Length: 429
Image 1 (tube, rainbow, N blue to C red):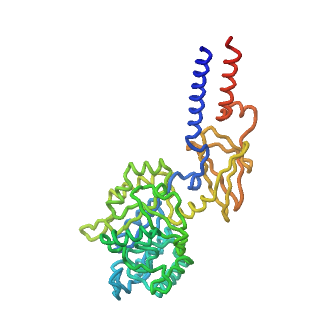
Image 2 (cartoon, rainbow, N blue to C red):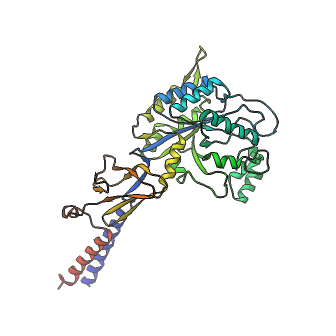
Image 3 (cartoon, helix red, strand yellow):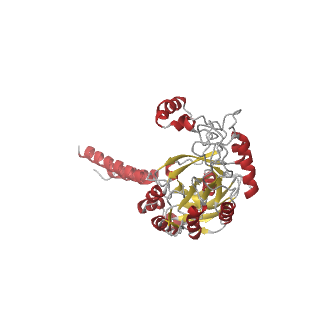
């Protein structure tokens, strides 16, 4: 009876010990690859749409961003609009906003590009753009900047928008719901967007696929865009004219933007090692007009942005730079072996500044002959891994290193069971 009770008690202790050990092991992987380069902890960038933009209104904002080390994405209209925006579709020259056809604005945008900002398009004009206008807009853009736009952001109701309205969703039943139910409340859903329809005067899907890499779509009110859309940038086979889609965090106007970058949200973005791509309109309240007729930046907005800038481990790059990095890091993996950790690069190009998060007591020797120990943020940085190559990190196998090693789950269970065997069959008469 005593033996049976003892066995049951010890079995319970074993189970508790083993599962406690198991749970501690399953808290998360010991080694993780950060999506950001050279030890950067988080990423923050902005895509600014040009709706209602006038140079004098947005210049104070961009001057501030330049001064504080931010590099963001500026969406522009290349051409003056020739048609209305949406329905009714008719000839109507109505460009209320600055475009690249206006010299002072164009010169300032070129200056921003020299400072490292990215210039995207918000379709080529403010109004419905037929194919010949889109072709001309791309040609004009390349003439000005020497390259094609890497990002396109669909504008509002423009009929050349691709996979827009109810077609943002591929499920036919949900499309029906959007058209016949949601469309009664939000008529835009039912607009005849035809940018992806061959034969339509608004077709330009082939141009988009050939010349532009990223298109913005889904949004969230969470500052951590990457947490909301962990797979971005992604390709949807059902929408072949778009190479990659990406999402945004909503900072539509100054009020929403300031809510998004509250102290609490900034702290959480850093803690989560997240990435934020904020969608906004800098012409929507970010500057205030003085009695003298000049525009000055909203002080509470600039105060919060300065707090972000003070985070030295923040990565402040244009949206496509961030998306390019996220795309690359999808093909960088860690493979654990016997006393070795392989950093494998499956990309066609080299990847630099690969940051690995690991336990604070880790010690490795790299295939480059260097010793690797984690910094105060539990990171090590691999300078470069060649295309279709790898970098090996070896753990020391000396007696002193093994002396400090902790048993794994299987070894731990094996030792406990052996101890029980001795107690039951050897120590009880």
